[in-house]
Image 1 (cartoon, rainbow, N blue to C red):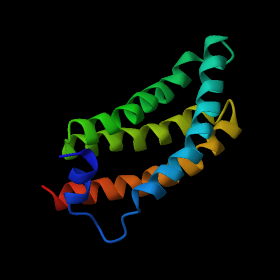
Image 2 (cartoon, rainbow, N blue to C red):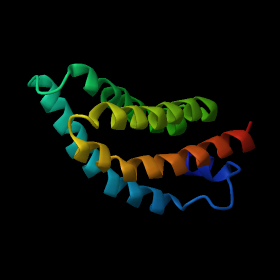
Image 3 (cartoon, rainbow, N blue to C red):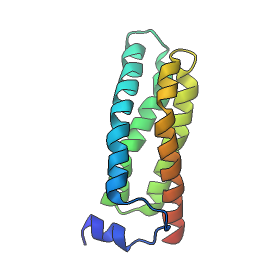
Length: 131
């Protein structure tokens, strides 16, 4: 069974966005993430901010990149739910960690946080409905 066939076979809430919509949202968010996270990593490496400020960004990036391999590759819905919770928490942590240094970076995370909040509720709903 292909990944899309498997995904379509899952029970999902009626408000689930179409896969194309989800893809479009990520096409908008990834450049924001690239610029803001890249900026934080460069500033941490140059010693302009404490390296620990970059920690939640690094954890978030790893968890974000692992979501699709867990969800679509392993087809492990509960583990994907745990992963997206890590993504959600680390966005908040990142925003609080960077705020004293670069408020624009914290503000740039607002659309990412908004989407991941929706995606987290969606993933938890899918997990619950397919348990």
